View (spheres, helix red, strand yellow):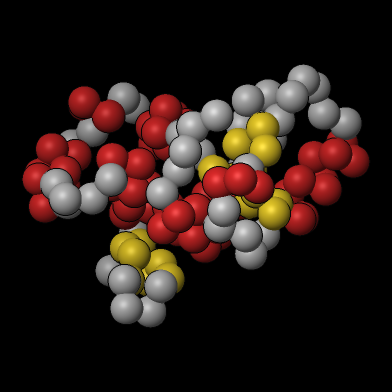
Length: 122
């Protein structure tokens, strides 16, 4: 399984707007709320019942891979207007973190506040 930066795990859990859009599907990664540890990450295996989906959405947070973030934006990353400039400004960031920041910027109009450790409106 993929190893995610710990900061990415924290940012994913706190990205409430993206978490609300999560529809658990096979191969999606998730982790118990409040836990930012790669050893605790699990992956959806097979079809889920409505009860299992409710449990996941209530007790766990989704850890989207970049392709899922691009899908939520409705376009591929290479044609998203402004993506290249955004990446240049964030070139020292891990690619997953950069993609999550761009998705939250594009979808929700929010940016990550390092000092406060939360998403804020721009």
